[in-house]
Image 1 (cartoon, helix red, strand yellow):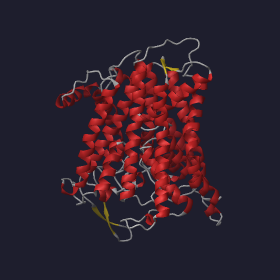
Image 2 (cartoon, rainbow, N blue to C red):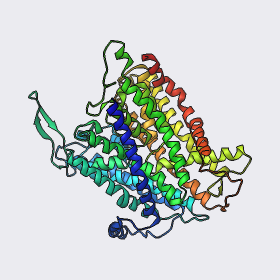
Image 3 (cartoon, one colour):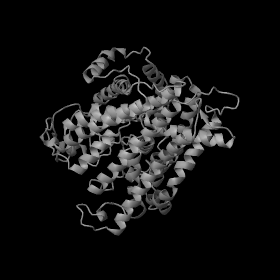
Image 4 (cartoon, one colour):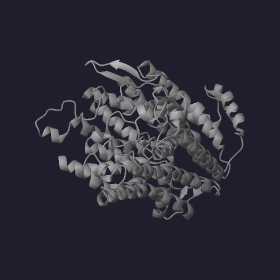
Length: 571
């Protein structure tokens, strides 16, 4: 068990150690300074030329949002029709059929928004064409969209008074060519050399040790898994995601994938510090995020390595910890670590079944998604945190009797209204969605639907409620993981979570970009002796308090009905 703990510590230290130089590199990319990947410039110029784009044309915040939303609508229709008609498209050696409209709607919207919620099994629900040219393509551009949106906000913070906030297409393309593509390539090569498939052949027939005939799915999985982790996407090639031995072959592959999940979100925080030349602010943000992360991680690891109390009461020894739903090749500690890293970001990939983990782990995983700002997704993690910064600055300013200021701009009623609406949107979507699902289940359990509500849950009582609460938390956090006990591939859940995914992705991007754009147009106020310092430990504590009060307490009653009640019941 000590070896497992050391493995977890090594993964985290390696992740932070790699994130700092990566953050410096990312800042150079967006500053336009020379980097070792400048050889990608001809490819970028070709993309701009074919697309009719002038990457030097400056955009204001409204033009950035217009570009993002326009291209997103085009991509959505492309994906929707590809998924419906995939049975008639090439690269389908296993002859998988097209998806139903409600499943195609959910899948297309889910991958477009970096959520990657999979209400299908990768082996039979999609084809090689849709895996590569729809879903994997979306894993690149959705992550790049988040980085591009973050750069608009960061650039607005850097310049004193301006409405020129860079070019969305330039941010988008460079996010792919200079950051996501090279890093994903490295991960894909490591996985390929450790046994992850890279073939376009169909299922292989294997004779098992017991003489059974097994049809094993293959495909160019290594390429997808690289960007799945680097882009905090999470959608797996196989149905069981990174618990599958071909998607995550050994402990080395597990470490590489796990480090990849949080590498860019942390690196972007340091990139902000280098880009703005405010390294202390970056360390304060990183510190607050890390405290939140550790607050969820340590109890989860303790719970999983401690074993299941219900099994212990039967007199059964659990030397390996609670191993239900986990892979022996990873163990309880590494599984718990992955469970927290994947939910503290908008990744959602799994190397163990969250539905089988201890209630304490369930609390941590759901709480990560409910906060949605401790590291968070690629780019959007900082956007969510930025909203809490605005609220914290405003409250702090009122407490000391000064007009709230952040980065030399006054924060006034307009910005606070936007920030408050975005902060409240997340709990609204999760709690209303769970309430509607619970109401339908209780009042219409046997309604004449293709999948009756009474068949939704594999577990009754507290855990069944947790399954529904987790699903809407995952959808609203653009995470994509789920409790496997919930039967989600039906019209209610496909459309219900699809609507939540849409609102929870685009409104939290629109809000921070709008705030940043409005502030960038305001008169710059130089720092004075009375200016509130936002790069101090004190202000970091204030942000953490705002996150707990505004976000965390909103979910406590729901958590009490689910994982907290379940934890108490099995003690």
